[in-house]
Length: 142
Image (cartoon, rainbow, N blue to C red):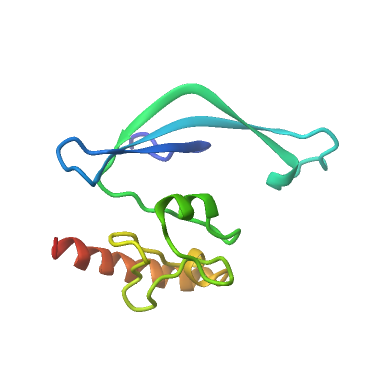
């Protein structure tokens, strides 16, 4: 029973620093979005090149002490990586260790498609599990 906790069409606007733990995330500020087709877009398309995104004015803050990015085969969001100071490879994937999943920024990890490029879901799952173990090790040492 219970309600489905998943949220869809949510745009992350800002990571808010924790007041109790400076330098750590305390919450994630979001807005709901909706999509409309651009004029002349093919009927039923879901390709973002043919869609307009519309943000609501209402912001919602979700408490957080850990943020994980699930980024699909379209590749990592370059603006996000630039804002975080994360280095990328010549293929525009995240530059991260293949054994520890650490990026060039301490405490930032990458796995799956954003690190290796488009691949099979089984590879992303395996890397996600290994990265979770690496994050656990990192946090245990803090």
